[in-house]
Amino acid sequence: GIQVEQSPPDLILQEGANSTLRCNFSDSVNNLQWFHQNPWGQLINLFYIPSGTKQNGRLSATTVATERYSLLYISSSQTTDSGVYFCAVVGSSNTGKLIFGQGTTLQVKP
Amino acid sequence: KAGVTQTPRYLIKTRGQQVTLSCSPISGHRSVSWYQQTPGQGLQFLFEYFSETQRNKGNFPGRFSGRQFSNSRSEMNVSTLELGDSALYLCASSLEVGTAFFGQGTRLTVV
Image 1 (cartoon, rainbow over the protein chains, first blue to last red):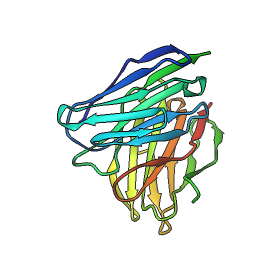
Image 2: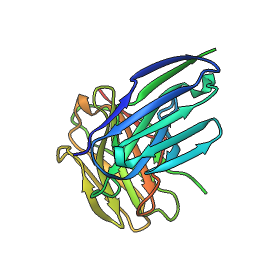
Image 3: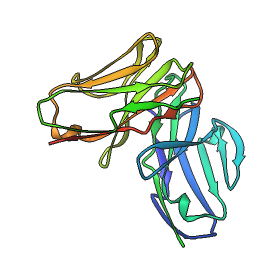
């Protein structure tokens, strides 16, 4: 099956800094999503981005499907950005089955 | 529009018991999928239902089962609970394809 790898596993930033999180996947995908898991465990949608570039405020994401990777950019980080960020994909033959990476744990210090 | 609702939020059960978790999807969404999150294994896919039919199944023992009703609400059941079943169980709903939206999860503790 598809393998999803996220890097780095852990990231510590000072408030105001920028960061880039990476997601590599091993096969073609129909769906790629980025999530932020809040302290209560809920996965919050950030982007649905199987290809191309999207921006939402201080966050943006780019997926290069032909090279099988996606990047999540966080600019001017805030303490509320802390938490775990997950990348998840759906393989081309499996509707509805999200395969998750292991996540990047981000800590933003004031 | 109401989001995905999971009940109960927290549950404590004893080894050997069974448990049923519930998930109400976003109105109009016909696909419901379930995931288990543990510190050791991360987020793992359990199964997906679409229009009352199981469309995909993950690699979990037969003790884990689910179903979907005609109103798209879904339940998952775990029988003969083991300590290792302690986890956060997350439900997601989506249209047939596209963005999956997650509920707040049910945190199950098996003692």
